[in-house]
Structure formats: structure tokens, C-alpha cells
Length: 632
Image (cartoon, rainbow, N blue to C red; front, side, top):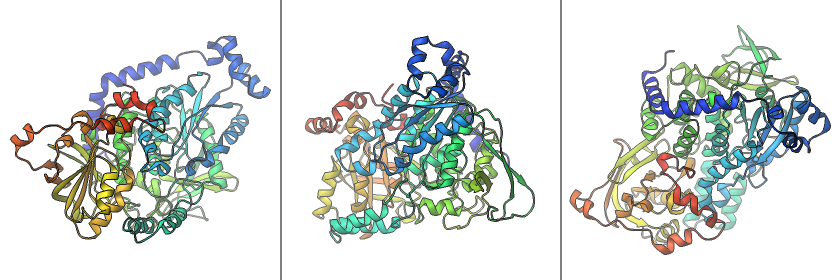
């Protein structure tokens, strides 16, 4: 299938826009790649320090045989359920590397906070900038400069973008990302949301709410809704940075262990290759409508450096996959920062123009009732990538960490005896969850750019009912989440209303996610009121069914238009035409005073729970559309 003209055009304009910065980035990579190996390049004392802590056999390999040395960057902690399985991964990787005549060292750890723990608390104000801290920590780990390849161990919201940003600053290294997979299915997401809405109305007490939450989040593995963490995994598959099919295999089984070992084989150029025979499927591994497994063997296939893999085509492929699955709005911030780190310049116009031509192929909570385990069982990333490739909506002429290119990511892994094998995913097992490109849920993607006299913002329309895509109602302005909750509790919001929550951008308080606003706003909508949220904060992949114009830029704290809105102003949010307007006479709007952030609020946002340490990041942060970069 020929590439869709719009995909070709958007990619070309990104490449042209990025030409100077991408060229400079690739030149950096070439300089780094031409250097002698670390053990020859570095002084004797440097080398002695680097190998002093590893076993004698590994030391001999590094110094005498100049064996490849893998740097492991690990986001393990047992605060994040998704990262608990990572504890044992370094031992598996080292064991596999030794079998292949190589070595591996844990180069360093990176911090990883759980947004689910910090939601609605001051700690959440560190969340967005933790991405940049993780990127810097990745750079610190790899700065030992003794590595021939790298493995990135991490899963969740800011962790993967941070690891990816850091890895791209060492873009001369072959690098593979290693996830841990989702927890098994617990309480269905729709039931969890229902209990939260009941709790917001006082119909369920703390004991009942806690019981529901514990049944939802119940074991090691990623949360099962399709938020930022699971969107991360899909995007890495679409960019060819995983072992194929690794994203949504549950932790704690033999398949997951073998996929982790395969990551070491892949980055060392000893990947397992699966060959297929023509003809009808055979055996339990053969999919419906697919090819039959024939054999698996290890082959030598050099893994390209990550800086070469992540070009404008790979970035567009990730954006397309995000749009086709109604993924997290956080990536309209994160992927701008990721692209920047590879010398590529993208903006929200690119996302919007792609969304016009990319169909919605998946309905996973909050865009549907299915969780990621059901998504995987129905066809998962492999089917999404195949359908997009076959429809000419993804670039096929891209590098990946695998010899077979992006087509390898249209297959699912399984165990064939004691070895790994991949098989064709076949047709959708459930078209209420995953559909072919010929029969999409919607002809366009799940995200929409909004712009007008209130600035530029984005809305996730895939979860919003069609009759709520246009909201026009009087504004009620809030300076905090807590103020909105207080108004809800006193029933001041029992009416048609556009809730404007300002002072939530990167410079104001670090741009926290505002998930705790979803239940009360959903309750109001459930009562029949026409309700919307407009904010310079974030809502992530769990933004829900209430229309929300988020990431409004420029933010209020930087003098953006939200700082001019007053209670009672009529606001129009139109996701059909892409408008976000305050319906105030133009002359009056131009003359209206811009509020400044209350000094007490700014002071309180910078004190406690370590927020003092992030003062410089808030001060220097770019806009959300510029990736909220704090290091520029």
C-alpha cells in the first residue's frame, strides 16, 4: 500500500522544519560513534574503577576480549506496581549477556514516581518535571561512557519519555526498551469509575471506595486502563524500540522472562528470528487467518543506534499509533520533548493534521469498556500496527531494533517449547475493542486541536459522547482543584457551566494532572447539565467522558488569556470546528485586565514535599506545546 499523501506531506514538512537541528544531531552521533571503545579510550584508572565491582570473568571479558558491555538503566522501585517486576531483570540480562560472550552492568537507577499515589496531592506537582529529572539521571548513568549498548528498564507515565529523552542524548548507542507488562484484570474500569462518581456524591463511603480501588489496582504490573503508561508501550512498539509484542504480556511468566532475555540478545545483535511457512495455520500457536510457525533461530543482526532509528518517520509512526488508539493527551507534551531530543521539531498542528486522516481503530478504557488485557487478546498493538501499515498510514521504510523492520511488530510472541516464537496476529478477535482500518470506530483520530481567543489547547474527543462535542455555557473560574470541589459539594455547579481551572501550567505549579476533577464533573454531566473543563493543566489518558480543553497555552501564569476570564463569561468549546472562544466583545476583551497569580498561591506552590528543589524548572519551563522543556 502506498503511503497516504497526508502522512507523506506532514512527514516531509517536519523533516524540512527540522533539517538544521536534525543534521547537527546526526553529526554529534557520528563523532561519538567514531571513537575507540571505552576500554581503549579511557585511562587505566578509569577502567579499573569501571570494572572493580564486577566478577573476575566479566572483568577479563571487558579488558582482554573487549567484549560488548551493556549499560542497564533501571527505574525499579516497589512503589510502582508496574516497576516491581524490574527488580529481577538485571540478573536475567547479565546471565543472557554472559551466554553470548558479553557483559552487562547496572549503569544507574532513575527515580520513578507513581502518579496514582500522588494524584490530587502537592506531590503531583513534581510529576511532569520528574520526566526531565529521569532524563538527566539517564544521562548521569550513561556518562560512565563504558558501554557499547544500553537497555532501558521502565514503564510508566513520565519514566519512559524521560528514559527516551536521556537515551537520545546518547544516540550513538544501540538501545532497547524493556517493559514489565500489565497486571491481570481486576475490577472493571467502568465499575471503578461508577464507584468514584458515587463517592463524589456521598453515596459510597471511604470503605466502599477503598475496596473498589484495591480490587482495581491489585498486583504487580501496569494499571490496566489505557492511560499514559500503556500508551507509552504502544508508541515504543510503533517506533520499533521494543522486542516485538512485548508491551502487554503480563509479568511473572516464562514468556515475559524470555522477552526480557530477548532484549539483551537484540541489543547485542543476536536476536531470535522466526521464519514462517505458507499455508493454513497449524497447532496452538497458529492464529486465525495467519501463517503457521516453522522455526526459530538466533541470527546476527546488528542493532542500529537509537539516534538513527528515531527519525521523523519514526516520530510520525508513534503519533499515528497514538491517534489511532485514542491514547494519552500527555504525549502531546512528551513526544514534542522526545522529538526535540533527536533534533526533530513537531507541534500540535502536526498532531491535529494527522488526526484528520488517521482512523480510530481501538476502544480501550476510557474510550471504551475494555482494558489493555482485553485489547491484547483482541489483537493489540500487533493488529493496530498491521492495519495502519496496510492502509498506508505508517511508514514501513524505517529502522527498528529488529532485523525484520516494523513488520516484525505485526506479530505476537509465544513460547515454542523452551524458545520464543512469533506468529501473525490474524483478524480481530473482538471488533468492539479493535477494528480493521476498513471498518474503524471513527474515520478520524481521538485528539483535536482547539484554538481561539483563549489560546491553543487539545481535547481528547474519543471518550466524549457526540452530543457533548460542542458546549456553550457561562464560566466559573477557579484558582485550584480544591476550590472546584468545594463549589461542587455546595451544589453551586448544578447548572450548565464551563469550569475554568487556571494557574495549573508548567510555570505556575509544574502542571499536575487533574484527575480528581473527573468524578464531580461526570456527576454534573450525568444530571443532564452541559459541562466542560478548560484548564492550563493536564488530564492524561484517563480524562474521561467530560469535554475538557486542556494544556491551554500560553498558560495563565505567563499572562495567557485564561487570566482574563471572569465568572459569567460565555465560553464556547467546539470540538467539531476546533474553536475555544470566550464570547466577549472584541474591544472589551482586548481592554480587560490580565490577572496575576496570587502571591500566596505562588508561594504555597513552591513549598513542601521537595517543591523548593524544582523552582528553577518552573521558572524556565517552556509552554506545553513546546514540550514543557525545563533544560532549554
